[in-house]
Length: 168
Image 1 (cartoon, rainbow, N blue to C red):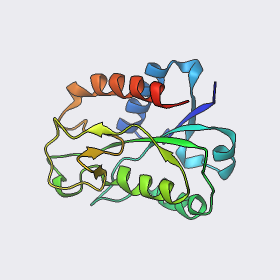
Image 2: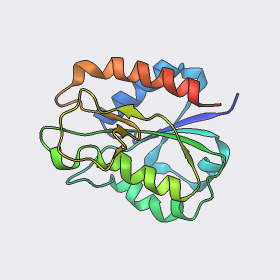
Image 3: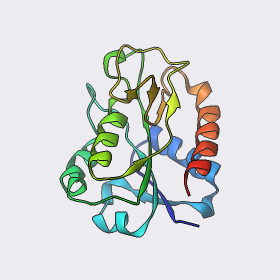
Image 4: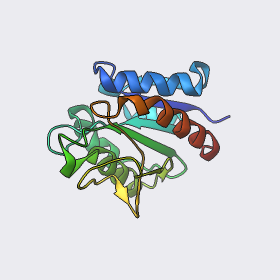
């Protein structure tokens, strides 16, 4: 079985809780947690399958830890690597850039040759625009803990089941 890593900031509250739920859904022995704030290029050489946390900050930006790592990421060849991205956003407070960070990170990964999996339906979300939406679906899993926290567990379970089928 190919090795899996989940990369998220250990210093956040909401993203960390969502990431921990994803780890539990995969089974703690089936995935390794990596702190995004201590990320190195070697991590991308060590694993084949990745789940990345990309919460949207401010008005549709990547968090600082991803923003600082992007120059290194853009230099990598990720062909043969599989990525799924989840992110937190607030569809009522920031409807014009809901979960944009997912779309921004996916675009960078694709330019590096990565295979992206884990698309999800836009059904059940209410927002104006999102860089994470493509062809009527999201290119990852948007999580809105501000307005739809009660839906998070079910969305994670469905997404992890989908990822288990898509990760080969």
